[in-house]
Image (cartoon, one colour):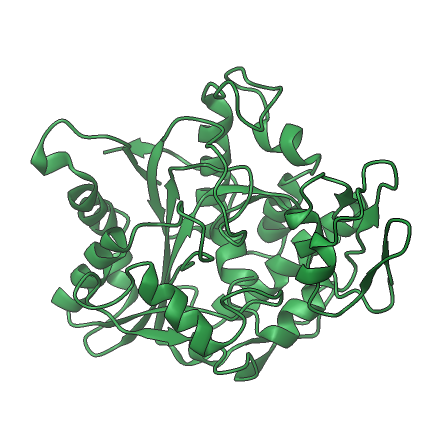
Length: 363
C-alpha cells in the first residue's frame, strides 16, 4: 500500500508527479499490456458538484498508460436516479462540462452501460445475494481496470471508496435496481415541511404530498435520492439492516466486475475533499477532515481499509456536518451516517477480494 500526502513544496512533489510515482510503485503498470483497452473507472460528478476528482489527475494516469502502450478510456455507468447522468447523452455532456475532454485528459469517454443503461453483461458469481450480476458491457470487455475513486462519506454505506466505485459504479441500470431493492426510505412526519423537493427527484413516482410526503414502498426503487435532496433531513434512507445488505450486494457486484481481472486491476483512492456525501448530489458540502493524500494498491479491500483508517486518524474539521467524533482515532463515518461501514470490508475479505490487513509505505 503506497501513500503520498496531500500538498507539495516543490515541482517534483506536485500531485501529478506523485500520481505517476504511486502508479509505478504500486505496480499498476503491470496490470495491462501493449494494445490493451484499459478502463479508468471514475465519477464525472453531478453538475453543481465541485469535489469530484480533477480531470488533470486522471490525465496523468491516462498518460502513463499510453506511454506504456495501453489504450486508456474514462468510464462510468449511468445513474438510477433522475439527474444529468441517467443516460449517455446527458452523462457525456456533464463530463465534458467538468473538463473530462481533450486536451485536458488525453483519453476518450465510454459510458459503460450504453445509451440508456441497458448495454449489460450477466456475470455468474454464485454468492449470498446474487447468482448473477448485471454489469456495464464496457467493464466486462475491457482488458484491464484501474479504479480511481474519490474517497468520501456516503449515507447508505458509511463511505464510498474503491469497492463502491467498482461495484455500484459498474452496475448497469438493472444491476443498480437489484442492489437497491431492499432499501426503503421512511419519512419523519414531524420534520417534513411538504415542500415537494422529494417528489420532483423521485425517478419512480413513488412519492406524493398529502399532509406530509408519503412514499409508496411498492413503487419505491430504493435509490435514496429523496433522502439526499430533502432540505429538512426528514427522510431516513433506510433501516440499518437494509444498509448492511446493500454493502454486501455492492461487494458481490465488485466481485463480478473483477472476476476475470483479479491480476489485471489496480486502484487509487484520492482522500481529498472528504465530503459527508458522495459526488452524486448537485452540490458539495464542506470536507469533514483536511486533505490527506492519495493511496495506490492492487488490493481493493486494503485500500479502502487504509483510507478509512487515515480519515479516522485525522482531526475532524469544526463547523462541518460532522458534529461529533472530531478527535483523532474516532470514527467519523459511523457518526455521520450511523452505518457499520466495516460490513463491506469484512464480506469482501470473506469472499476473497482482498485483505483488510495492510502495510502502509509513505512515498
